[in-house]
Amino acid sequence: MAQIQLTIALVMIAMFTIAVIGFAINFGVDNNAQMNIANNPQLNTLNANATTGISTFSQTSNSTSNSILSTTIAAGSQSAPSVAPFVISITNPLGILTPLQAVFNAATTEFPVLGIFFDAIVAILIFMLFLLAYKTLRGFPE
Amino acid sequence: MSYLYNLPNSTSGIDTIATQTVSAVPAFAPLLFLFVFGVVFLGGITRNKAKTGTADYPLWATVASLMTMFTALILSITSGIIQLDWLTYIVLLTIGCGVWLFLNRKVTEL
Image (cartoon, rainbow over all chains, first blue to last red; front, side, top):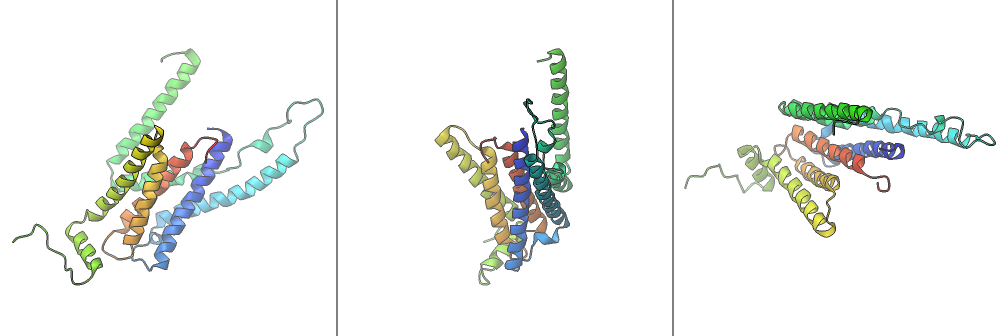
């Protein structure tokens, strides 16, 4: 994925997570629900992680935009002397992707047999990764 | 006449019928959520494929999981219909479908 696409996807994931959890918690509060996910510490941690990710992104995107504005290109040069202003603004993508970890944890806690499926998927991905790396070097196998 | 399940007390309101149905068949609520998710998801991708030739699976999974979450939230007002665990799983399913959706988008769409 491209940098712009990945950054936007991570930010949208974080905002979607905050919106869903916030809506569910406030629905329970407004309607005096007997079951409220605010009582689940795992989802509260997930909400806090996403909120921290968005807060960090808002600060780093501000400093990144300032550095882009102050970028100078020397006369005769065709590019900026450094790509530092254009580095990704999400400083903690794994922190924003904790929904995936939470989903896996919940699924494997309630249904332990699902763990073997996740292990198999990860093993296949690693297998494909090494095959692609070897194919890039040697040109085979297909 | 002998019944397979004990009939719910229908003179105490519809919430009593629901809670007594769940107490007789504990899998009622999860299967209801599976039904809601399946109707929206399968119906959506079927019509999408019929109209355009391709189906946007992550989009319809997200829409279906949102509809399932709304149903679960409504049923969470009264105790005895769904458990907190299932409500948590459905919220996590919604977030997981959102992750799938946003990582699946192309550059030109959001």
